[in-house]
Image 1: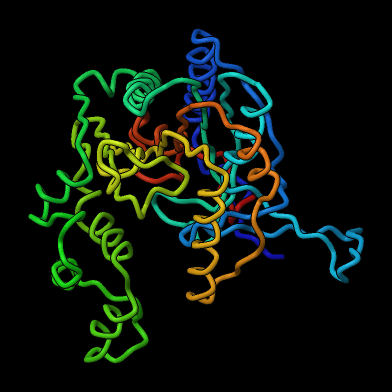
Image 2: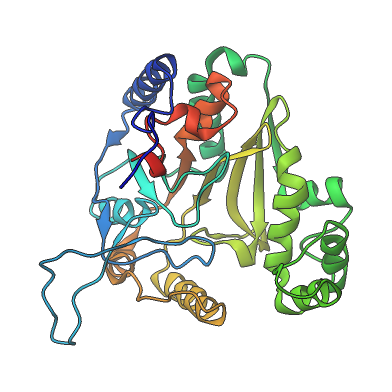
Length: 344
């Protein structure tokens, strides 16, 4: 392999590497003060993510043995330590956190690298509101002086859409979402002719895909200006691994944190029902097949753990590298990483 002359060099400066080390120490001190135990789960797992927006990297070993089914076992790099951490929670670990590298395919850009660092933690007995406040505290600890002038904002998903677009994401007819998406240039494919592209894209899309587009293309980039902005109560169809809100079953007990237009965290009041989680996973797999995406099996160990009994808890994953970007004034994720994937 031929490489550029200076391609061996790190992408982060010495100053930012020092800030990275100090921030990691701050995170550990934050959790130590709250008696939250650090854990370390495997990066190589037996089941991939089912979410249609997350793409798992498969791992193959030269000494993999063929199973009785005639194929070697399949392994994947984890996209989050969530499933393993929930198994620890069921086993009685108590409050836990983890700082780990994860890998996701198709992730490259100013705010993306295929491999990045997550801080993930779970708090027994916490409500969604309590967890949002704790995330606010950790973010401020890492941001330091940068956050002194930042407000803390808590906005429902519905109110964010109503304020930015005048569209009710929970009640608007599909045609209204389609119209708003077209106004912002929504399309699924650049290979279709210009005359047919928009009509074909809308015909192929569903409600959640349109909502995701509107959030990414218009709303998200405007959130968190000089603020830590928590968007909560996502539509029930976007619950993922969160419980539905008993006060309004149209919504899920889920939040995301934005700062300066950058998504930093995704948190849930965790779903404890094994049967409901299985149904959601199977729905994901059906959608992956519809989109011609890989659709491997489910994480049966997680489902067995949930059947045994997940304690009432709330959990969150926070992107450490993105938070460090904001803390250091970096304009690109590369500036806070020792080495990007293309230089690994």
